[in-house]
Length: 94
Image (tube, rainbow, N blue to C red):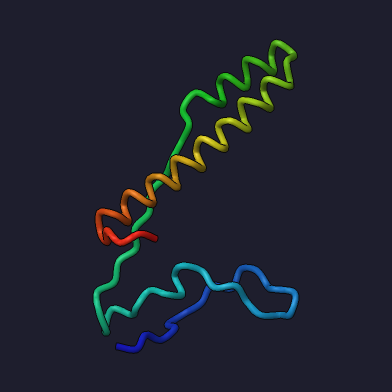
């Protein structure tokens, strides 16, 4: 089956005036086949409150460190979740 580009949402231009594609550019039109999009969200609960507490105490360094740690934790959690969900569908390695 050959898929075709059904629509595009142009958001950013590359330096050579080509457009970036987004996830919706790869969704098959409903008249051809049923297609699916999956998504998930990861959050580090309590990081904002902890940052606010440190900022109120005047400890900007600890606030920045908590933000950086929360960012890295969310990133690695997302990667782990993506790999786990991929393994449920297709157990071959990425």
